[in-house]
Length: 91
Image 1 (cartoon, rainbow, N blue to C red):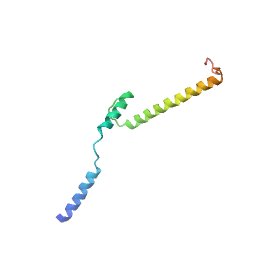
Image 2: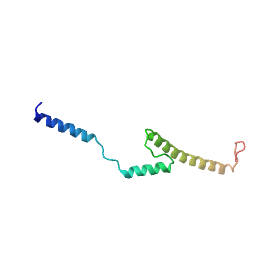
Image 3: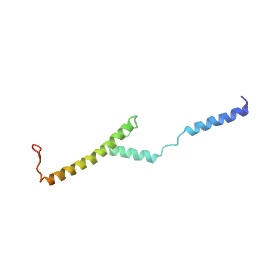
Image 4: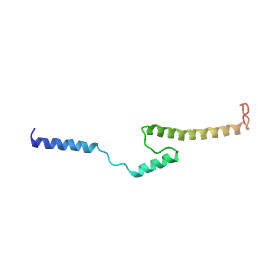
């Protein structure tokens, strides 16, 4: 292979390597995610389980919404039945 042919091949290979690189992460995003993790009471170290932990956090948030809806429904049922309950020892 001649020198004239090696130069374009090397340039293409170098371009591909540069294109595969990523930019530096935004420090503001990291600070925000660390603050959210501290707020949730989690350790801020990065682990391979971060995706699973984030999924659990979203599930907890949905659970709060669901429990609020259940509480509202229970109050509405109690209001309609004048507080009488079929449960033994219930309110």
